[in-house]
Image (cartoon, rainbow, N blue to C red; front, side):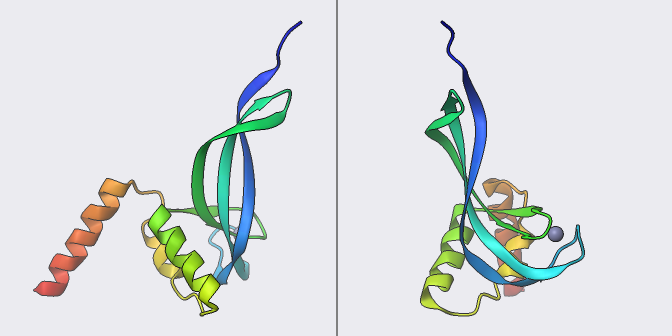
Length: 116
Ligand SMILES: [Zn+2]
């Protein structure tokens, strides 16, 4: 008997839409989706344990996405739940693909600029 297992199966849960945005990849203006992405350990192709969690907004047309930090995700989600418009999408992309350390550095630089 052999056991078939694997890493890396991803599931996406759409939390809501976060406002209209022009996609850089497919050049279509549409309502982007706020998503939670979980990466699973699988056994016989069945997801058993989620071992990674990430956040993103994604283009519903071509599925390209921007990664969000947990803080950015929580902020957008809170705005969705309060029923407010979500104009923060443009901001969310600003730090896409950066590590937390880089983001903190960039934010500190912006703070410094404002004080001058
Ligand atoms: Zn797209």
